Every structure is written in C-alpha cells, then in structure tokens.
Image 1: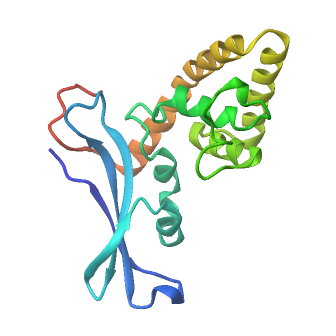
Image 2: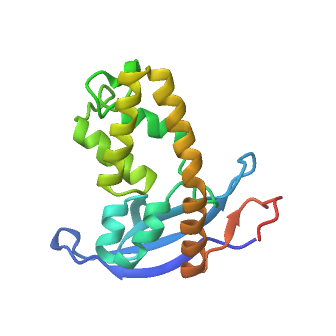
Length: 194
C-alpha cells in the first residue's frame, strides 16, 4: 500500500508566517469500513523544522501551491469524484439559498454559523463543482418545481440531477488522479480499481 503523495515543502510567502514552511500531502485515502477511497489534500506547518499545525487548510495550501487547486476541489470526494453525501449536502446548501428553505427544518441558511442565501449558493456551487451560473440554474429549476408542483417534486428532481452529474464527476476524478499520479493509501483496499 502506498503512502500519501508528498507534494513538497515550501516557505510561506506571507510575512505573517516568518520562518514557517508548509508541506502539502494528498492522495486517495482508504479507511477500512468506508465504501471507497476518497480524495484528500492536507498540510503540515513547520517552524524551524518543528510541526506546529496543519490540516485541510486549502486557502493556505493554495497560496503556496496554486497548482494543487484541482486536487483541493476534489477533497473528500470519492475516488469516482462524487462529493461527500452529494445528494443530502447539496440539498442542504441549495435549500439555504431560498427564503422558504424548501420547507426544510435544517438548511445552510439557518445553520451555525448562519449563512446568507448567496453564501449558501456559493457553497453549493463549490461542493458540486459547477459554476455559479449553473448553480443558479439548478436553484431556479428547483424553485419552479416547488412552486408549480411541490417540494417533493423539486427534491426528486434534484436527486435525479445529482445522479446525472456522476459521469462528469468521474471524468474529473480520473483526470486529477492521472495529472497528480495519485495512488490509494491507508488501510488495504479490497476493491479493484481500473
């Protein structure tokens, strides 16, 4: 079994991080019990060679490793590129993008911290890896269905839309795996990947 890919260690460029370096690592992490490996990109912050923190600080990582943006976009998606809990998380953020929250008791607009409708739609777009314009189109279609028919119809349409994204997500995943030479690491993966 491989280890996470080390993308190198570079000095932080901001004066706020004087004498600090950042190491970026990533790959396809498999943990026994999960269905599939998932994409990961994390960092370690080093002061004078001593580890002082890190994690999935993508904004910080990309400030020094901008070429890793495609991998950062895939963080926590399955090896097939499907975002984590794509249907449920997507609906949660999409629901936060409308006044009535699609009648959902819990959604991104009333969570903690509370987010504006615009923030919810931006998070939805990032999660689904679509443009803001496409996210707006998904929202408008769901709103139209919720008004003309009912929220149940809008929810069913959204689930079908998520399913329709899977070939695109798979192609994106395959490209990132190829471009970055990623391998599965962690626990032994019992599945066979082509």
